[in-house]
Structure formats: structure tokens, C-alpha cells
Amino acid sequence: MTQIGSHTIELKNEKKVFFPENDITKGELIEYYHRISDTLLPFLKSRPLTLERYPDGINIEGFNQKEMPDYFPDWIDSVSIRKKEDGTIRQVECNNVETLVYLVNQGTISLHPWLSTTQNLYKPNKLVFDLDPPEGNFEIVVKGANALRNLLENELGLNAFVMTTGSKGLHVCTPIYTDLEFEKTRHFAKQAADFLANQYADTFTTETRKNKRKNRLFIDYLRNAYAQTSIAPYSVRAIEGAPVATPLDWDELSRNDLHAQRYTIKNIFKRLSRKTDPWKDFKNHASSPVQASDRLKKLKAN
Image 1 (cartoon, rainbow, N blue to C red):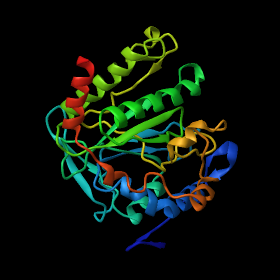
Image 2 (image 1 turned 180 degrees about the vertical axis):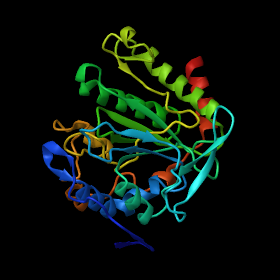
Image 3 (image 1 turned 90 degrees about the vertical axis):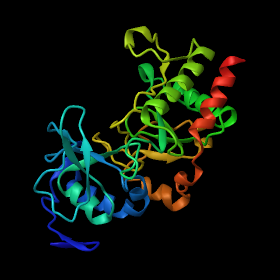
Image 4 (image 1 turned 30 degrees about the horizontal axis):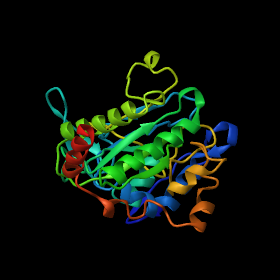
């Protein structure tokens, strides 16, 4: 039994190998999340959470878990979510280090929080644009991220943040006030993506069908909907090497060695020892999606 925060947790099978090619164990994963908790938890607190679980390691098929199991201890916070069909489910909230360690002890590798908080489930407080490289072309992802930043910040009055996803590409995220419900923020995100796709028709697209994209970068706005999630900053991905979704400074996009899996549980703390977390004050830079939407309408009319 191990004391974590204000609770005692029985850590199990710590020597089980979760990432076989790199011989990274469950215990090392638990240690990583415990150590990163102060940096990670602000991006999880008070948000419904989908757990990506691999109880036997990444070589054995895992599963995504939305509903909180009955056997989870009653000290773990949860929220009741209305389903599209009749009824509700309870989803986990990860509000403290003991919950975080407990979830990893259950085989959770990746953490996918909502874009809204439990205080205001139907009104998001951030926007996410997901940029995955076509045919492994990371250069076009960087170009798309910079174009999004220019639009969001210089034209629409928002603040844009960028991170590697730890998987294939980059996320560009924007903190917003909870002025609008999901339907309207998703419409705004689509309109912003469409604007860029029209401006750079040979480079970017919002075509959802892959066979219609023709090696253009898909500016994915689809996550901006009720009950959708995005990978949490500093979450590990269920990929060999244990890559970490890592917030970046914008000037880091020009690095020749940058790729989506550049940072892992093996090198992330060296990075954080040398520089301040670029997303440390993320929530303090929120802006109005209503004003941004009005600016976009005027921009499109010109």
C-alpha cells in the first residue's frame, strides 16, 4: 500500500511491461504521472474524462472507457452525463494526484478530457483544431498551425497555443469564455477552418472524405462538439516509446528535429527543467468567441 495524496492505494503489477520495445513498465508509467501531476492536473480538473486503458500493455488490445466502473472508490469525483439516448452515465473527474495515480494503476495510459467543465457542460471553454500530416508530411502541419495562429490571433483577437499530440501531428488550441454552447462554437470553428481552406485551396482542406483531400492538410474542427474530447497536454500515448503530448512555444515549430513524438516520458522532465511550461497560464488567456465570430463574418465579407 502506498500513500498518494490523502489516500492509500495498492499499486499492482508495477513490473509488468507496458511498452515492450522500450521495456517501459507500468511502474515507470505510474511514476511519470505522479511526477508530472502538478503540471498536468490543471488541464484535467473538473472535466469529464475518457480513459484509454491497456491493462496488459500496448501489445494487447485496449479500450476506451467513458462510464465510471462501480468498483472505483467513492473518493473519486464523478459527474452525471446525459446520453444522446435515454438515461445518464457517470464519468470520472480527475481532480487530484491520488485519482490520477489510481487511474494509471488501473491500466490507463492516455487521458482524454472534455472541452467543457462540469460547471458548464454545454458551453466549452476551449477550441481545438487537430492537424494530422497527410502522407507523413509534417512540414505541412507546421504550415497549417502557423496559418491558424495568424488567423486566430491577428485577425480574430483570440490567443492560440500549440502542442505536439504525441501521435501524428499538432493541436492548435484556444481558450475561450463560456459565452456560447457547443453548436455555435463548432460552427465558428468550421467557419474559421473553411476560411483558411478557401484562402489556401491547394494546401488546406475541410473535406472530411480522405479520398477528396489530395494530400492537402485537413483542418480538423470536428472535436468542437458536445461530449467530444481531445488528448490532454502531458498525457502519454499508447505508442512504443511512450511519447507525450507536449505544449510548445510557437518558435519551436521551426526546429528541424520537431515531430509529433519528439518528447517522451524519458526526456520530458529534462525539457521542463530548462524552460517554463508554455501552457502554464493557458486558462488566463481566454477571449470572447462572440467577438471572434463577428470579426470572422466581417473578414469573410471583405
